[in-house]
Image 1 (cartoon, rainbow over the protein chains, first blue to last red):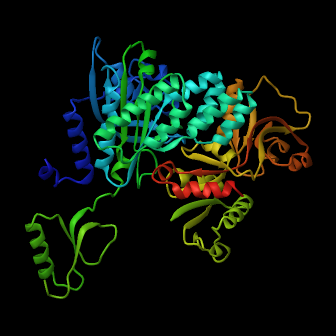
Image 2: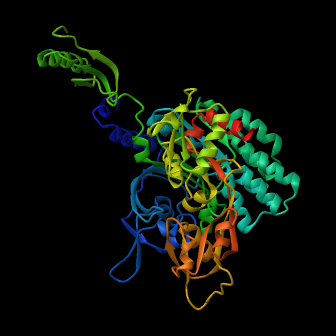
Image 3: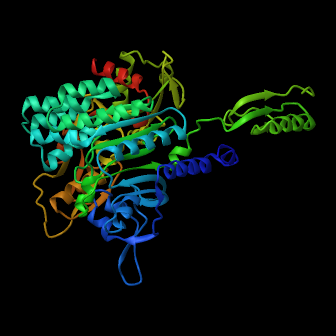
Length: 361
Length: 203
C-alpha cells in the first residue's frame, strides 16, 4: 500500500488513505445525487442555514438544491428498516457564504447510523484522530458534550432566546457576556456559577475530567461519565496525545446530543474536522436511532504542509547539469523522491538537502 | 511569535497603550510606513488594519489574536473566540431618527447604516419591512437630507445626534472592545494567548 501511494500527490494520497481507513472499519461509500429536493433542507433550516443553499427550479417548477449537505442526504436516503449503516463519503458540496458568494467545499467524512451503546461514537473519535494524524502537522481534537451543557441550562430554566444567546456566548468563550446575561435574567446564583465554571473547563483530558466530575451532577454527571469511558478507550489505544476536553463546545439541542468534537491542525485557520452525535436530528425526522459522524474540510487539510514534499532536495548551485543529473540519478536509484533546484527555495521542503559543490559529487 | 491584529484609529491607540503596559511595546510602530511591526520584546508581531478587517485576519489565521468592537463582531459574525471584554470603546448600537419622527407604517422603513446585517436581523425580528441604504461614514447625515427615515449606528455620547436634531429611538445592544482569538491558534497550544488575555484583564 505504502509503495503504491508514494507516486501520488499529497491530496491524492490523503484521499486514498482516508478511504482505505474507512473501508477497513467497514464503511461503504455513499455517493450523493447532484440535485436533491429542497424540502428536506427546508425542514432542517436551522441545521444548515437555508440562505446558504444554492437552489434552482427544475422543469416542473419544483425547487431543487445543489448538493448542500451530505449528512442530511444520507439520512433522507436511508433504506427503511436499515438496522445499522456505516457510510463514508468524498464529495463536493455547494454553499453561499455570508457575502452571498458561491463556495465549493470538498468534504470527506463518515456517518455511523444505528449501532447500540456508546461504541459507535468511540469509533468515530478514533477515526477522527487517525485522520488528523494522517493530515500531519501538530494537531488537536477538542471533545465536549452537549448533554452536559444542556443539563446545566435546564437546571437554570434557560429557554428560547435566552438559551440561544447563552449557547452563542458559551461557544465563543465570551464568558463575561454569559455572566452578564445570567445576571440580567435573574438566574439563580449557585446554578449560574456552576454553569459558568463548567463551560470554562478545558485542557488535558484526565485533569479536565477530574474538574468536571467535581462540578457535574445528575444528567451532567452521566455525560461526564460517558466522556470518561471514551477517554479510557482512547488511552488503551495510546491515542490521548493531542486530545483535549473543552466544555464550551455546544450545539443546537434539536440536532445534537452527546459528544461533539472539533479537530484543529497547525496551518489551517479553522476546524478541519467537525463532528458529533446527532440522534436528536434523526428523531426530528421520525427515525429512532443513534447516529454519529464527522466531516473533514479537505481543502484546509491539504493546505497543511506537514511532511517534507521530497525525500532529497539537491541544490545544484554552480554545478554542471551532468553533475546534477548524476546526483539526482543516484538518489532516485536509491528509491528517494528527489528534486534538483538551482537555488534553495524554503517552500520546497525535503527530509534531506544535498548541496553540490562545483563538479565534485 | 504571536501575531496580533489591531484596529487603526482611536480605539487602536488605546489598545496599543494596553499592550505597551503589559510589556508588548513596539517602538517601530511609531515611526515609518511599515505594515508589520515587531514588539520590542521580540515575542509578537503587530498589523494595523481597518476595524472590520481585524475579524478577517483573525478568522482566517493571518493573526492569532486581535482587538475589535462588539459592533463589528455582531455585523460580521466571524467564527472566532471572544475571550475578553477590554471595557474600552464603549458605545450603544441604536436606532436613531430626527426628533419627533413619526413612522409611516404603510411603507417600508428606509434605514441608513453601515451595519446592514444587524439592522436586517433587528427589523426582521420585529416583522418590519425595511429598505437598507448602506453607507460607510457620516450616517447621521442620511435622515437630514431625506436619504433615509432612520439610522442604525453606534452612539457614544449622543452629542453628534443632538447637534443634528436626532435622538435615539431604540437601543439594539451594547458594544465595547473585545479581544478575539483564532480558534485553531487557541486550541493548538494557545498558552501565550491565555497569558496575554490574563495580563490585559489584570490591568
